[in-house]
Image (cartoon, rainbow, N blue to C red; front, side, top):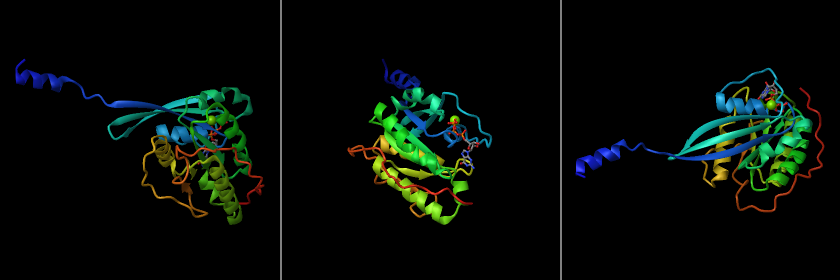
Length: 231
Ligand SMILES: Nc1nc2c(ncn2[C@@H]2O[C@H](COP(=O)(O)OP(=O)(O)OP(=O)(O)O)[C@@H](O)[C@H]2O)c(=O)[nH]1
Ligand SMILES: [Mg+2]
């Protein structure tokens, strides 16, 4: 084959990018905002109306990481207790599991213990990420309540060795960052996103959590009782 033909042949070969599929599970009590977060991240839509998830929702989103296409398969489990038998669909095979609670309903943070215990029993390799939702409503609640929830959430994230993010799907706060953190922790990459630590701000803490080398994870056992929020 002459040189010019060789050249032409090379040009006809399409450039094939690597593709890596990553499953991420979303779990937490009913109405904490799991479906809203997933739909916002994948379709950039927010719906104020609640539609209960019956079983499991599934959406995909592709992102680029250097020369690789990462395809996120997001598995969103309905939070009603009756769907707990479908937890394996969200937990088994997931590289990361996002545990969501509603920042305005402290009992949903308390429930994370049980969600974590059950999910961890099915998959103890997944990176856990703890996400407090509805930050837009949380900032209108009294400061003492905010301080207490933030402290308890941090206690939980420490025991779970999970990055902690407060987000608002309604106001598009910290949504993309949750998945950037998931990706970084799964592949042990360095992230340059600034951390946010102050009470009243949309907390974003990830640097010291979720290192693949960390071992002794256990369930949160914090007995701190949270007060009911006041507007
Ligand atoms: N203000 C505010 N409302 C939100 C936010 N995220 C979700 N919601 C609302 O909270 C309600 C519940 O959201 P969903 O995403 O359906 O909750 P879910 O966790 O999927 O609930 P289940 O499917 O029953 O497990 C809906 O009315 C949403 O519009 C948020 O960031 N801010
Ligand atoms: Mg749902």
